[in-house]
Amino acid sequence: MDPASPNTLAYKGTALDALEELAQTKTYVELLHVAHSLWCGSSCPRNIECKFLHYKMTEPQASKKADLVPPHRYNKSTANYFTLMGGEGYESGFTQEHQVNFWPPLESVLRRIDQAREKGDFLFCDYTDWTKKQNSSAKQVVQCFCRDIIQWMAIWNGVDLKTVPLEMWLAAMITTPDDLCIPPLDVVHQKFRLYGRSLRDLVQAMVDDNWGRDAVHVLLSFVRQLIFQYVEKVEFEGTVNSDAGIHAQAGKHADSVWDSIVLRTHTGGTYVGMILISRIAGLGMLEENWILGSAANSCISMDLAKSAARIYHVDNHQPTLSFGEQSKQSTFEKRRKVGYHSVYLDMMDDLAGTGCPEPLLHAAGTFLGVQLVHRYWERSLGYRIPIHPVMADTISNIYGDEPTDARLDGLFHLRLLVSGHKVEQEISAESTLCPDLLAACLERQRQRTSAWKPDHADTCTSHTIPTQHSSYSQPGAAEWISDVHRLSQRANNPKELQKLLTSLVVVNSTPLSVDHLDAVGSQDDLWALCMACKVDCSKDCEWLAFAKYIWKQFGSSFTLA
Image (cartoon, rainbow, N blue to C red; front, side, top):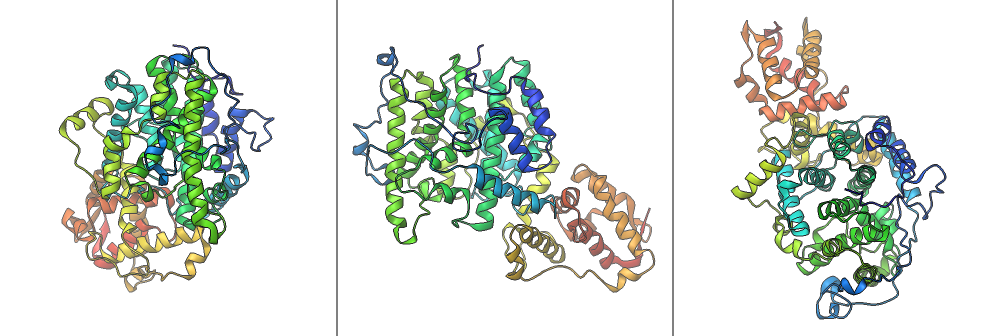
């Protein structure tokens, strides 16, 4: 099959070689620069003309076959009959040109991230849950967004999805950073997996399937999405909706929403989605405007439908929010909603008028998804809907039976331990982890937050277990604590950890029992502490706190076998 993506990349090698270059990077600024160089080359001026971070739409040229592509049924003539985005309907004159150069704000926050990582490689928001749906585990998050992908891809493509497994695996991978705060370097360094597959596995599969430059477009666009998703989550957690973040920079103009539209498209991952749809439909090479326009409009159409369903306001990052003058925000936001809606209608006309293939037009205007895909029901409800047995079988047939690995499970659970608490509040009695160790987790989280937001340390009360205890001075205590601390690097999953603890640690010549461990915390709790040590060990490491706590509880009656 011929590639669907246009021959516009500076890089002409294979996707595997491109991934090797990306995998050599150690910082986020470096990752951005390498991905950009592969897309644009070394001569790009890094301004609004940069086609990696910005969309430059060319003047549409009418197709000789335009009469074969009817306009979308929701268009400038019919939009006034509905109340999407406030119900103001269509207005001409909203530009499809950038006002903001994304380079300065993006590089600025990536430098801050790199500086924070010098104090600890695990940021305060890494692996947090962004669904707002009361998930109990990483497995539940992954299974549910794979369900969502199956439903979306069915609506978009109308084919038996079991016949396009690679496209389905890729669609799931690009959905991940929307629901979980995934560090991009973890993905390119192959530390992150879905159903046992790393990014390298998927790139290898694309190369083996002769995707050609489509594979490179998918890879680089996904890295771009990872970076933008990470930045918006770090900024949101750290500064909420202040006027300092990249969304605020894009949202300062009342009569120009193009910056926010492109930012929304980058985070939505729909550029890759349009390539997947094109390959499934066998469309062959496409014009650049068709991919860019349909990618942008597929995001806008979701937001338009969400506005009608009264769930758009639940989104953390609404492209129509205004960050202009405080006194004019209400007026500006109303104008931005009109502009968001109107640019969508302009682009739909341009897509149809230039002969854009029907599969992309369909994806660009799919309002039906918000009504049918369970993802949006759950967003409205604030909790999960049980997965139907037929869907569970479909997920298993397409993706497999193990959504996550022990690493992801542990890091997600670590975040779950502290997500329901504020550092200044009392420790909840509902937690299965003992209060002392939960306090240690909260203190370590406070430190990570302070590494990103220094003034956080002045506003929170420190909660941690004492660093000194009379039992720590007993003979052999320091060595015992150190040995237990090192056990974290030997365990690869919760069962291995439990086996190590119950075989190496004894009380009065009796092995430490599972009951002893259960009195401290659940198996998932202890594995979360262990994973914290694996990725971000320090003098206040959660697992070191565990070792000290066990010693404090049982004192010199412990010896190592």
